[in-house]
Amino acid sequence: MAYAAYFFAAFLFAGVYELLPEAKGQLVGAANAEYALGTICVLLTIITVPLSFKIFSNQLTRHKSLPLGAKLERYGVMWNLRIVCFGIVTVFDLWAYYATLNNIGGFCALICVAASTLFAPTQKRIAGDLDAES
Image (cartoon, rainbow, N blue to C red):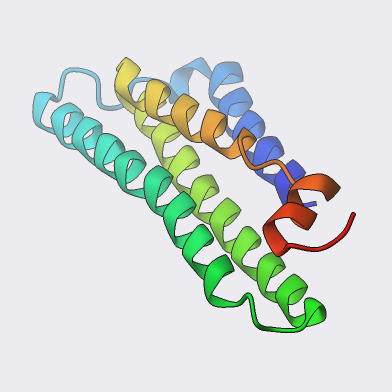
């Protein structure tokens, strides 16, 4: 559910900006703002993507001794937290792209969306992550 909401929010946000051309480019020509937003986009993406994978795997190994029900509950919380972090960064990157009309924000948003597809929740993946039988 959260996974579908993430993609829906990203597409809705981009769709609104595509349908309202007057909303685009508010910061075009403001070199300092463009530079700052581009830098923030890159830093947020560089921080979010690797940390989401590393912290998630560390949390999984940390809770291996718990019973399956508790592991499933923590897995759900960690997964939702990760998708919310990706959602916030993706929406910010898209906003920066449309505000500055600079490709850096768009590329960073694309990186976040591509990284989020690497951990799509399937029964096989969840069972493998939790060391449970399918």
